Image (cartoon, rainbow over all chains, first blue to last red; front, side, top):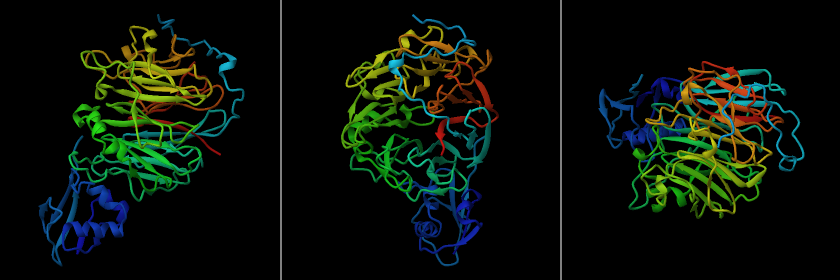
Length: 85
Length: 402
């Protein structure tokens, strides 16, 4: 499925949209890390928590659950909620 | 009593007693000043006379760089502790002085928590320390919240030390995030005895100073003689807030410390720190963050005091920045402010942002919270600004290049 990568992580992917496989958000992030080593830890901490300000949307709906099931054709958007002054 | 608080614009640093100095002075070397800031990193390349500096950067623009350190064993490998406001913490490596960077395969991250211990995640790697000269490729890292990590492959992968990170007693001493400094409690001042790679020290803000003689398997607190905030119990390790600890290269049995509650010295195997900041001018006080030691003379150390009164403004006292030097192990201090702003300068210097080189006379380098880089080529007798308008400076290191 297609995954939208935020600008802050494009140093890993070089492009804004990449293909990744997985039956859950967790598996998609693991596949991203296989393709782009290091990218997952920038988004998810060692306690498997999505880091503050990182947001994952599946077909336009926000999810904070790494176990969220995915189906072929789903669109995953990873977005950085920029904040602060 | 303090000897003087008079600016020493025309005073040359007094030579230390000959017996205290190593017989040889190093030949002039090409140096690079490594500047880590809240918004990226810069390298300033100097000539052998330390007169002209070429600035290279930014590296990691927009990233929070806590520490940038060159491996003194190969003089090629740079490690940078990096995060952004929104992305997780990591370590980058360069083996060509920053022309290209590669991310560590396994940056510092806590192990899954032991039963009964609260789980923790690394917020940022704060301190990087090369390992022993005989253990090439070894490094230590200190994190926030407090954790100690070791790498044996040049910073490519990092392993947590359970004797600190997962020890219930240490976890109690570390306290919670609310007990730490405003941007998170730190493990810092990781020191490797040049005579023995198994002899280690580190310090925590808060959580005291600790020593190991078996390579980090077991640790003992080293806090006797250190004061804590009034009303608290010095026997409680968590109340101790060492800001930075430095070992004298010329005498590894002597350590100096800038603490939340004053300036101290200890001579091992002694177990008791002695407050040497009591001889600082009363109006300036002996609170601050950085402390640096002379590379060849264990009687000489510098501090950069900060206003730690009332609400802790964390500015230069009275808006008049100055370093202070002791040339007799802390018996007396002299103010060194020639060339620095005379007034209305409200910056200060963080604990990692002041460092010496190993030249003769010793050069000093300090980075300010207002983004200025100041140097002295004569042990602090005269200061000059060599870069300004940088972001807030977090750390300054000097690297001798081939």
